[in-house]
Length: 108
View (cartoon, helix red, strand yellow):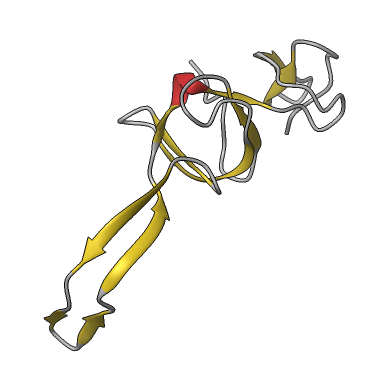
């Protein structure tokens, strides 16, 4: 089974509080089936000042993108600009590429 979402892809959230939002994939965590999307699922964390080793952590309230489940996002095709399901195709040279199920164009 191939990976349908990769780092750098534009995805649309299809379920949850941020439904309808689009953003770029910052990280993919395939073991946990999570993805981190810029500007989506923002959470606030109250950070205490920590001095571990030489590094310091800035205290205060920090805001960051929390992971979202992979099943709650759908890749956006760069050609038709619509959320799409992903298919896979083998090229003549043996490479496996992701294709848009709406327009048939390559996502890679």
